[in-house]
Image (tube, rainbow, N blue to C red; front, top):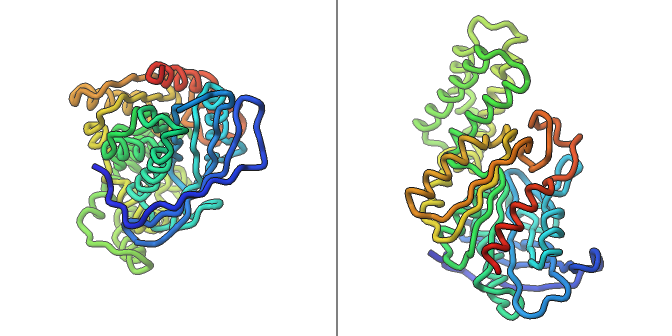
Length: 367
């Protein structure tokens, strides 16, 4: 269902100074919008790449960033995955819109208190921008591509908006945030060589943390952090009983980590993330879905989450394509272990195998 708009979107498009290659051009895009939740006016800024030499309406793709404060290129550890994707797709005939997250880069707005649902609202405005220009963009061929948390955002928007022609995901979740964090922690700590017995303690402590949060009525601010820290300390003490200082550090059961959990759990984003289940939104989609997972993804485990996505699609008759790529990590890179600290040392993000899977799927729906 379409979100009720408070104010009309004010759109301005300014030709950028940089023109990349001869197959496409870049434009700066600025959307002035109003947050439904806070009623604050903010500006979402981004880049639109347009294929050269294509007459009439072109298919378009909106790129949606993963968790954390991300710029339009989803820049991290020396890589610019969204710039790579945009240029690749525009060279194949697609218009691609990628934007700075609210409060990041040239975008304004409150990132600190924003949740996944707020990010979905921002993407809906980007969708409206493309739909308001039917002379340039084919309204029947507007797709969403989401990476990591962005995959959940894409599912939320597609569940609400029937104008979405298809959703593509890279490293997307098929379960709620609690499940994802437990899977992620087990994988990451195992990659570090931490003993299974210590990992089991950490996971048990996390489950207890989640259970405690479910029983508390929490607000925001330092009082909430203090309340959570006091509630968490006995749990950390219980699950770290009998461990040496070094063992506590190995599995993250220290007082410092306890306070870190309290700070994180007090944020609206994590509170929402823990209970949000993308499967609930995938079930309501009426457009095709492509789910790409890397075999060595240690942040969103491919086998478990692709299986969950496949199940919900089958149950709800959502047309889906599931692709699990060998030797690929969460950023879509060819890797050795999949560990996060390896990202900076690896090649292109995402790798051409990911780009080809995405482009071939888009072509199958666009032609």
